Structure formats: structure tokens, C-alpha cells
Length: 232
Image (cartoon, rainbow, N blue to C red; front, side):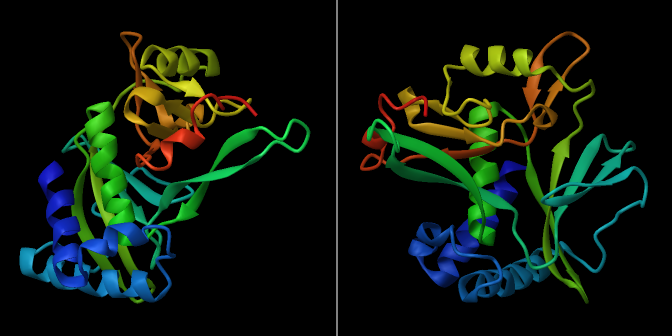
């Protein structure tokens, strides 16, 4: 399923140019986002994965901040469909100075993504956390265009904050804030954002598994901003 994310991302770059990956922070509703959605509709038609409705069975549907989420018990998959003409979120590092100490600090906020930013976010999520998220379809309805991804269902409950912290530290991350929502791993210059407890599962055998974090790999020229600034 990983190849479907890469194929769509590469298709967009082939049409719009390789620098499309540098414009991931532009809103999906802006000119860049609309151009990417139009290209994705063509891509979906070519591959036979264009849907006219987001729900596949109409069963076990919930709403999140980014997606309409549908659980398909027959296939064991979760389908997550972005809200119309939106492409979820990407993580944005914000550099600044502490108002009292004047030392450099790093904050992370979530920003609306372009479609290519959303696709590459899930590719990185697969790489870092070993998941198998794939692009299932592009959905075109009167309300707008959405991206639909599929993900293996992970059974279990919501872990505690302490269990999430233990897991993240065990994976080599350090917290960037006092709420333990955003994390930094220096060895591969990786931010893992939106690490709230409901974005993890505690499996019956006691393992903590990420299911919906927002990762970002920081480039070489930016990484120095983060070194030594783990706390605000």
C-alpha cells in the first residue's frame, strides 16, 4: 500500500515540478492546493480509484479533526477521508526566542497541508513507525475533493499519557513542550507532532502503537535551531 502514496506523490511532482514538495505549507484551498487536487483527480481516473462517495459501508463511522473515519470489519482496514477540499495537516516548526531568557526555543504547530504534503507525511509515518498506510482513493463529491487513505486496524484501548511518554522516549525522542504533544529525535532530525494519547493504541499484549502522528524531517540547514532547545 505504500507504493500508492509514492505513486500519487511522484505523479504530482511529474506534472507540477519537483519543487511542489517544497510548497507543502500552502493551504489546500489555495492555488497550489487546487492545482494538486485537479491533478489527483486525473491520477485517480487513470488508476480506477475515483469514488463519488466517501463511505464504503456506512458502518462504524466517526469524525476527527482531519478525517471522516470508517472502520471496515470485513477487510480489517480503517478508511480515513479528509474533509472536502482539505488535505489534513503537516507539522510546522516555529523558531523564536524565549521572552525571559532570550534563548532559542522551538515550537511546533499544525498547518493545513497541500495534497502532496499530506501524501508525503503518511509516507514518512510508514517509514518511521512501520505502518502500512496507503492511498485508497480520491473522492469527488458536490462538496469537494478529498483524499482517502487506508490503514490496518489496531485493536486495543487508549494508553495513558505516561505510557505514551515511555514509548516516545524509548524510541529516542525528547519532548519539545510541557504538554508532551510534540517530540524531537536528534539522530535523524525528526519531529513527531500531535502525540496526544488518542493518536496511539495500547494493544492487548501491552504494546503502545502510534496510529496518527504528524512526522516531519527537518533539513540540514534547519537542524541547528533544535539542538539543545528541548524545553521552553
